[in-house]
Length: 344
Image (tube, rainbow, N blue to C red):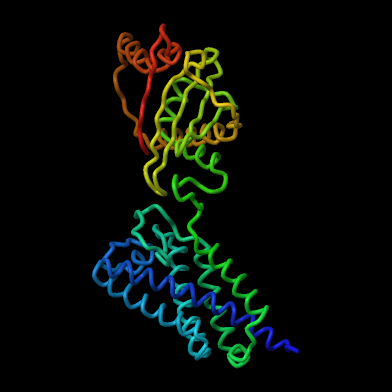
């Protein structure tokens, strides 16, 4: 019959195996990036203020130490030494990541990454701190129960601990939001996430100001890797809609937006069957627009200028209303179809 000490030793040993595997993967990624001399502007590099060559040497050394420690822990040959090394690495990670979080230094941690990330595409979050804390705590526990962990049977408790701790570490290490492999769109709440990104696009704001306001219900469909949103103006003509086609090639890449005015009554044009509620997104966009306008008005210096002639004012209003007047025309035989593309 297995004693309580052996059960605890089995659980801690299983957690240590998972943490050791994470160290091996993290160390291998650092060795790979350093061997290829990838210019990684991570938050830790910014915090340490290291030039490119010293950072590459540091990456090679850190990757080698992490791989060696992870292999030592996974082998179970020297649990005290392996636990001490894992706890030391976890403590160093916690200190560095804590400093980055307090100082709000931009950039990712670069802990597990095989490619160079954009300089400001990511930020260190609490998940990286939690993963480092897990390494620290597991390393200390592995040292304390080293004798029981070395002699613990590799049974159900050990396998369950490996599976549970491995799942937690994967969730803490994966980049959020999780994206599909082909279209690179978020795996969860794909439509809502894309809609929120679209609402912050300058082209959406321009079309909402000229052709809007939009109704709180829009139509949506997905064609391949392109999301298509049909917005109807509150005061617009029946059947006419402002269509936004959104495509994002990769996380952190520029958002490609194609805008057009379409009339569902035109032959060959079909509206999406699915409807979604966009009232909350439009409300957040209007709040953000008002806040930015107030900030610009406070920061704008007071200038004294002579009054413009009436003819000048009328010409400016006509120019600004050109898009709105075109939006009122159906894109069929009696009107014009307007299409605009842009990126963010």
